Length: 273
Length: 268
View 1 (cartoon, rainbow over the protein chains, first blue to last red):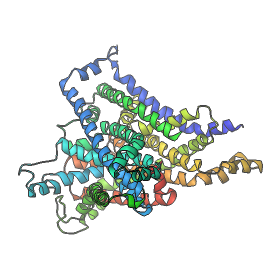
View 2: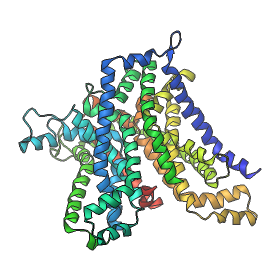
View 3: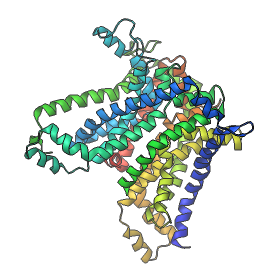
């Protein structure tokens, strides 16, 4: 047996599983999206793109995902920078605090937000007591609730992708900037930010993708009225049982995500290689 | 940056920022744990009174216990299958002797970048078209597929830091293929394989999207059960189940930290 055969044998079971149980099903879904009673059709796509309701769903998905991505980047960058620059003990604690929510089931985390944001929950009550909100103020079943819940779910992804890049920046560059007269904020803006841009971009692409394709948190916090694309797919699969239409929606989501994913894969490939 | 170069107002701002962010990150988890110890019938935080009655309810409710065992069974099977398949693939990828190694690496990591919902709907349609109704096995395979990339990644990370000449040395001293794998390569990659195994367990145990798409009566995992309760009428028993899941996550994180070191995991 040659070395090559040995390695092929090692990789083969995984290769077969992914080919048969991952790539084939996705191909099947692509095929189903153009399936009609009389041969291939684009009817499912035109139904989606010609209906104001579904276009609204699509627009909400894109808009909310953009907002969520921007907020995650705004919180994630300083968080990652601080994580990279504190002492090793504090860093370990911060990493644990970021990973704990990341590894907790999305359903459980969303449940926490349901409790916090509900009518008699801590946050609306607090806002009412401070006089910042009226008596009828509600957060559940609003887009704000979706954004809060999703930022919580996705912030760890953003922080960890930026941390990976920032921790490789030579701190002497910042010291040089400071000793040569830059203010602290100038150092961040002209040295740290440009150097950590690959991490910010990779994190943003990842967060956007995950945000556009999630439905558990939007469904539970936004309710059935505020549908996003993934929730609409889930509904077509489980409630209206219109699988070809569900497949067409999934293809639309897939196409949108590929536009974002291709630069992401390029970026991270360069990173690892 | 040397500490005297950081102005004091920045330190203060950073402290406040970290405190607020940590509160934001932990709040929903703390709230869930708090509610689970409540005495009242209603979900309220801070909880009214203290009791373990909801844990009693959960432990004696077959809906929850059967979902729990379903989740555990799938997660354990996924741990074994994903670690075997992913670990073997990682060893092959690490040696870089296969044609198209870079392409193969992307191939093995692709379930990681493709959103689970797209895979879930594909798997449901494929399985229904080819094999008929979904079953326990469908979910096992599905979870294995999404867990494999994690095992590949952690194992590759550990192997890439190991001494490549050790295997050569074993070969020149007459060790056969199986011996080299068993006594050199697998021990070298063990921390990565171990961490990958725990990740695989965690992913399967927490996964909701595939499980929701592939659900049917009798095939309900714990996250699906919680999701269903949240859609209808949650009571503090949901919080008790969720707290058990959080506790399990904490244990897993501690174990992974021991095996691989979280610092290293965080930067890969």
